[in-house]
Image (cartoon, rainbow, N blue to C red; front, side, top):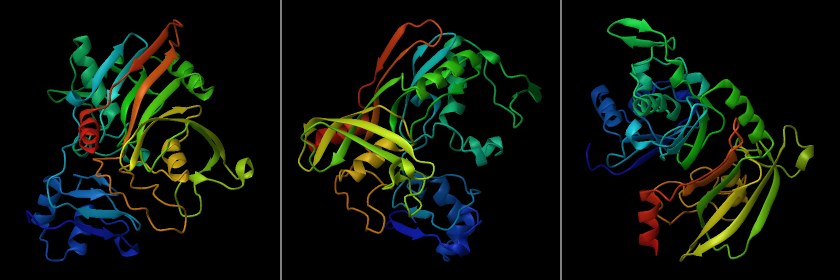
Length: 341
């Protein structure tokens, strides 16, 4: 199987509800069960652009399954996450690309062995925080406690973390978690009132040579199942106002490096706004085209979607102290840009 060319499959109704291993068997009938499992364990399978190691994952019509010709980068571990700031109320972390911020709701009851195949950021952080605080960390049970020598233990409240915002799986950068319910409530209020400043560095296709502000009303379904801006504006059902301030930083051959400052923080806001402005992110897999159009080609060679949360500034929710954090581009984007230059 090694060295085989990359293959891409678009799943249809007959694949609904199959496990990923069973879907691979149906898509490539010459595969044995052991070969299908070996592809998964060997980091050769992506679902919707994301590495998947879980042979029991259920797939559905519309999913895109890709068999890679080589092993992909392994999932992030606690060692790939860095704590930037810790106090009794907050934790600020540097999130690597390739890890989901939070476990999807439908996956919260998965057995621990399946979660450990590809842990989420909120599952990795307690282990890292325990190490920082000099506390013992043991594996959580399905009920949310801990398992130690066959006994179920109560989780240490000092390791509790409460998410207040998130980054996309393939976006790297700064994130803040609350450690207390009081801090969580105040941070949620601050995000809702746009009192947290966030700046991203993005690399986009095409040339952006002047600053601009993009404002639209985003809806969950623009007509083809993807999020996007509605031509009806605020009159559209469920529409949310979204504002992104874009400033050019550097021009490359066929790409532009830009800073994006969020005035609002809607799901996929930057990716949608840049794509609708005619400048999709380099490495973008989803927002590449308008409804009814063909996907726009991306010859950039970006290692992933080129988006990085570079700056986070806020007033401490309890003390009021001004906090500002910055994170340089991670190695994968930095090395890619060096090759581009």
